[in-house]
Every structure is written in structure tokens, then in C-alpha cells.
Image (cartoon, rainbow, N blue to C red; front, side):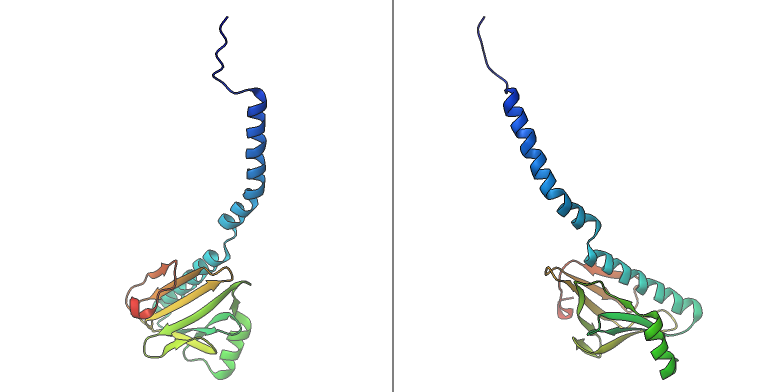
Amino acid sequence: MPRDTKGYTLIELIVVIVLLGMIFTLTAPKFRDAILTDNLKSTTRKLVGKIKALRSKTIQNHEAQILRFDLESNMYWVESADMTEEGRAFARKKNADYFPSGIRIADIWIKGTGKKMTGETSILFTKKGYVQESVIHLESEDGREFTLILNTFLPRVKVLDSYIEFEDL
């Protein structure tokens, strides 16, 4: 009988399967973490949700609201525009949301105010749901950045997965 060898031996198949198993074992945790626990994406989604809810609340209650940011403490909270100083301090203490470790606000640009990189800044939401035209830049420790664009009249927050200067918009 002529012997044509047109296949793989059992040893060759076992070696390939073992190598694939090792590669999968080493890359699966990183792949899972990137997909399931991307703090930058989840923080961006949470902030966009907060902005949408705040805009709806101002329209529903006919009450101006302020979204405040403390860029050094890496936190944000909501205040009513007509709160007293005491009420503002309470709102900050009680309602502040902190960004997860490794995520921070790079800067915030607000039309008429300019770019802020330190200290506190705020974005006003009017009684009719209008918002100050703003650009929020979020960044992660690994260098990735997101740009959130708040347009005065549009209810949608535009999210870009890179750092875009407000002059380029």
C-alpha cells in the first residue's frame, strides 16, 4: 500500500492545542477586564446619565440646577441654583460622587468662562432644560481620554473617545 501522509500526527495536534490553551489562559483575564471593568467607559456612561437626568429634572420641576465639579478632589455633585451657602455645603457632603481611582477630569471648558484645570467649576442647567455649552475631558491612568460635549439646545450628550479641544468642535 502506498503511504501518502497528508495529515497531522497526534503529537502535532496535542502541541498546538496546548499552545492555544496557554495563550488563552494568559490573555483571557486581560480581555475580560478590558471588556467588563473598563472604568473610563463606565464612568463616562454614569456621568452622561447624570447629565441627562439633571436636564430632565430641571424641565420637570422648573428649577435651575447646577452640576458642580471639584477637579482636585475628583468629585461632582448637584445643587439647586437657589440654595443657601449652608445648603450647598450639605449637598456637596451628602450627594458628591467620586470618580474611581485611575479616572480623573483632565479639564472642563465652559463657554464664557474658559478652560478650568484646577479648583471648582460648575455647569448651569436652566429651568427650561438648557445647559451652558460645555466640554468635559475625562482621562484614565493608561492615557485613554474621552470628550463629553454638552450643547445648549440639544438634549443629547455627544461622547468622543479621544481628547478634542473645544476650538476643534
